Amino acid sequence: MPLPFSLEQTGPTTLLVKRGFAAPPARVWRAMTDPALVLQWMGMPDHPITKAEIDLREGGAYRYEWRMPEGGIIGVSGTFRVLEQPGKIVQTELFDEDWTDGETVVTTLLEPVEAGTRASVTIEYRSEQGLHMALQSGMDEGMSSTYDQLDALLAS
Image (cartoon, rainbow, N blue to C red; front, top):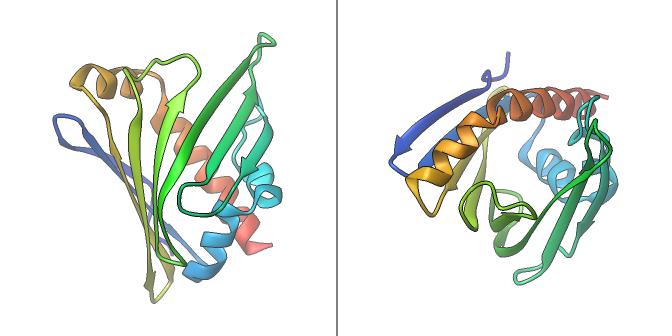
């Protein structure tokens, strides 16, 4: 059984998310970086993902958009700082409506384990206020749900 979803605050402006997947790191990497695959797992029933654009190179940009229940669009953009296939992604992240108090830095590590892959995602906010705003958004439920969908995609 893969490692269950967990989210903990590890510093005043830092969150650590962990989740296991029953697939090798190369498959998890591909599902996280191939736009066609991202479109299959990153949305939720009440706000499906409608856009996944990824220029997968260091310095390359990405853009994701979701349709919200009330009809609006929420979007996030960023730049890839480090890409070490299949084990490490460092990227910036900034939502169109800046509810996290500025750009965040997200470091994703994909480590091989006996059951498949352990993903460790460190999210560094610019301020304590930004971290608290993120926590109040329900991000834990959203991330857990989308990672469940990623798990299902990897199993198919």
